[in-house]
Image 1: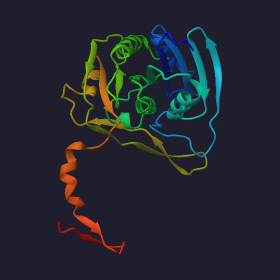
Image 2: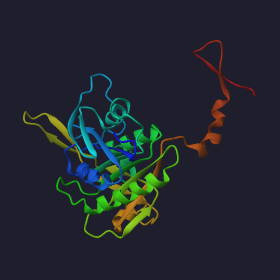
Image 3: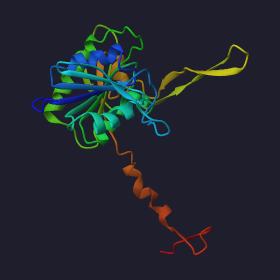
Length: 270
């Protein structure tokens, strides 16, 4: 690997053969040397999952000028861990993940393998960005997504990101893209999440489905509003999940101390 160019690490959760990851490689390949370590098949919804009870396999798929591709049997986070530990010969300058087939806005950031991988890059102190397109189709049009990915990747390579912060970027489907908006995560949740059905022998099964219930559809500073109005949304995400504004309120719980009887608690008079 050339040490004269930025090293860009690419992964996803749809598999190394997906159109989305190929589009992401196209978007960033002129910015530096690209190494892809991605799952060998779909791993959607894996969040930060890792493989601990079985071995992981990884093999070289292709190596051509400026782009090297590996396929891994693990999760998206496995791909980042394994790639950074065993495959690259130096710390990457940027980790980019996606481009996901489907949105990862709002609460989806918690479930997303795309964002799990981006957050893992962030844990390794590497500027990291997760990209998603709000179109689940395998043949989705990624042209606008490639433009957004190229711009933001170039910007972050130039300026970096604060330690502990990565970016969750979503791009609306359709031909028209008005621009990019930096937003906050929308408050909401998935509801009516399962459809009850029966399998071939009549046993009951459940299919994951549902719809997103937006708690603040008119708030213009949210990612869901940006996407609904033709903008790509950029939400800075923190690795530190501490609710800092609640710490002082919770201090009262410290007024308990263990007695010599470990099964009992007593109030601390101080």
